[in-house]
Image (cartoon, rainbow, N blue to C red):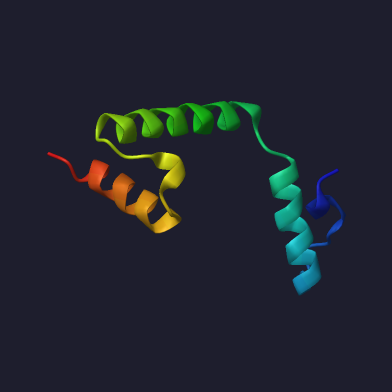
Length: 74
């Protein structure tokens, strides 16, 4: 059940309510989006390997920088 279904228009979410809505969004993931994200991650792993990098060994900042560099390649 969607958490927002039971809210009236004049109600505000408490911090706990906001957390529940966020958690509900995570639980109700879209299989198509999950497949797309899995495919994208596999492509990133391959691009890393092609450049002598290990996606698994990279920290989040390094991954973000790698993707940023890919976006800005000419």
